[in-house]
Length: 412
Image (cartoon, rainbow, N blue to C red; front, side):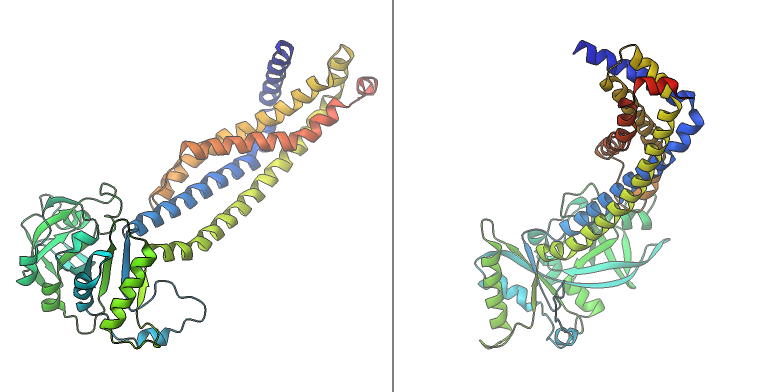
């Protein structure tokens, strides 16, 4: 073991001297590795960012919440859009029916949406999402408030013009003070701000996604924006300990009765859930990941071939040195280890340069996607460098180790 450690340290020092003795050649050789590592880290950061962004968006849907809507979130093979568009609208009354009849649902609420301008005394935001909801919305979906309170049944019954707005919208409209208690114009109608949501990233999982949105009582929404031509989304929270499929069967039965469907008629509504989106997005994520792996593998292959080529040149240049070392008793394993370590060191230099270049690149990516260059990605990058150095440096090192001492000493 002591001898092996000595040979390893000696080979490492020789490799370092060789690399730094030919700086320009080493830099040009590592260029392919640098490009490959930058590609690996960038692709890993992008894929991670896409996945995190998707998880943040989908988490707001809730794993135990189903959505009774007119359109499916994911259209299967053979789906016909004209069948969906001819379905009768989803009415708010369905939420009341589920609350009174369903045993496997803890709460159901109706939600309607529109996009309008928001204005304060001095600032405005061109278009935000305005959601009209029932007062029991907080029993179905998580709502994390930084200030104030969510409107009550009294507010809903009185169609009061009150609003709960996102933190981003509050900061945009009132950059130098609190929005609580102020008057905001939503689509030209005045509302008093009674609550402000926590900023995205600070809210609990499932409560994000409304940073630039506003919630108002559904009765006020009907009064100011109308619901005659709008579909409602009925959101039902599954009771604790109840299987999702059992709850969906009960919901389907109640909704069919409310919509007066005969036994042989097909459903004229959809029960959407988070899992269907995950299943639909999975092939897309896999395709992005596969394309990324293919591109980065190609870049690393080019870099590895460059390392192999320069190592063969190095072996040729140092043939006499190899012959002298063998003549004085160096073993094959010592020669093999020497050139193999040199190839790995060259790749590691490329890896270090690649990671350094990846840091500003990951900062640019983080401006668009919620991702960062993590320690895991850096470790993967250096592991790839060691792997490339070992794989592509093995053939030149084996050639050097098998050289015959007499022929090596004669080499000019």
